[in-house]
Length: 307
Ligand SMILES: NC(=O)c1ccc[n+]([C@@H]2O[C@H](COP(=O)([O-])OP(=O)(O)OC[C@H]3O[C@@H](n4cnc5c(N)ncnc54)[C@H](O)[C@@H]3O)[C@@H](O)[C@H]2O)c1
Image (cartoon, rainbow, N blue to C red):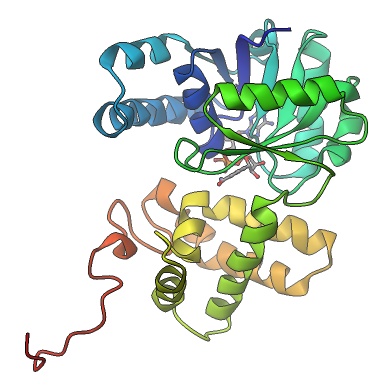
């Protein structure tokens, strides 16, 4: 089967990016979300991406117009998937919400439709019982800022059809991703197996008062020549998703430190509307976070120092 029609389920941070990137690469894209408000936000993101692609990524006005023309938006799930060859799901990182969504999806999607989850921490075998097509169910996991961080991790479960797996690998390539086939189910794939411990360690250093946000980020940025540190990364991921991941893994592995960090982030950030880049403030203030200032990584120059 040739993949032409793609449905993105969940029009938040990641879903909006995947929708844009997929439409830009020539696929017909239907964006589905349970909430009209989220679709409106997604349309605004798509306007911003259009400007970004025009100004900084060498896209022509014609390419942008064609991308826009390939995007449709709906809150009607049956309508969203009626012709779908593949669904890329990016709804909240919560097992019950995902299972319930897949039960509904399975009832209305055509037999041909491949289901892929972008879940960061839930493995396919934890969701697959919700669908009647285990051979067409697997994970296709993207990283935030997908046109720059263009890694796509592909992870099946024991019952995923090898041909479907290969097709999803090819689809990832077709939308400009570097596919990373994962050979066995593993919580966190490759990327989050590396990233979550880093972010958790940064969170612990901060919540225990060992060092402040900027110092922790500076340490990482200078030592590893990185563009941003763990708190800059967390702001981009979004505080709600960070909270969801800490709660999910904390409960799963009975990790009290993770659960404590989740509560800390909830009361000190989420409850105060500080959701990261998307709300204009998280650990840093946006659009000009301190870490992107050219002086951020410079040593302190004393006024008495001769130049
Ligand atoms: N944020 C990241 O950096 C990142 C990176 C890779 C993967 N992911 C994964 O992508 C998924 C979504 O994360 P996000 O950060 O984009 O979240 P988000 O909160 O920005 O977006 C979630 C969207 O799902 C919608 N939604 C909620 N319940 C729904 C339902 N029942 N049916 C349909 N839509 C529903 C919400 O309205 C919202 O638009 C999660 O599984 C997360 O682990 C996130």
